[in-house]
Image: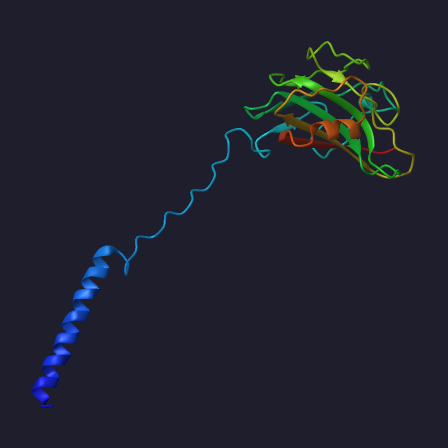
Length: 206
């Protein structure tokens, strides 16, 4: 076969391959359109636990709780206020406990729940009774003292500084929980329904 014929054949093959390439590229086979990536799920407004805050006018965060609010004083509950509650909140609940107590579990000082979602605070000196006058609708549970309502700090003498955690929970449902529930029962009822949480800490030693 002459060189001229061979060149003609190769030219024909190259032309055919070029034609195929045009067809494939035009159809998107060789240059497919990238698949759309799934969009990130947007966080619902007002459901971030980082937004909600709680504080007390009686003591600064991380600082000593005044004698008035302890078992050595008049043992009344301190005033508390909060802000930035998630928009989908149906109720609020509060647990106060002391993980420094010489017991297997943190010593529970206060359990109060079914606090209306639109409530902004708990006033000082809430009476130790099942149903609370203000905020209306709130009910109290049992502390580790075995009593309804608030029981102030009262650690063993010489046991050092104890830390008291005031933990506020925003819930997306109304709890079907009667008065007198303990911390364990409240946590069980709240499971899967917490949409926000905030805490502040006070200290006390004897």
